[in-house]
Length: 99
Image (cartoon, one colour):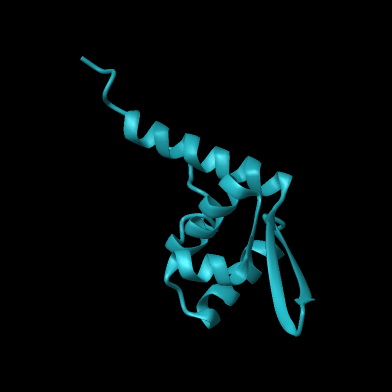
């Protein structure tokens, strides 16, 4: 029987954001935007969804005269990402052990 995949992480852009953060713990908005090729508006919406779910935190500050947005993965975000990956592995391995 297939477990449900986390619908929040099943979005390509949100999954990409989480994949970046799982490896680096935190990243600037501009870095995430460059890596994902997303528009600023779309990325902002998806980051807010992850933030509202408690998967990431978002800190806004200034670096010199320029605004800086830092995204950081939370413990909950790590746990849910790891569970998502494990569930995907189960999907991929289903039927391969049967003779």
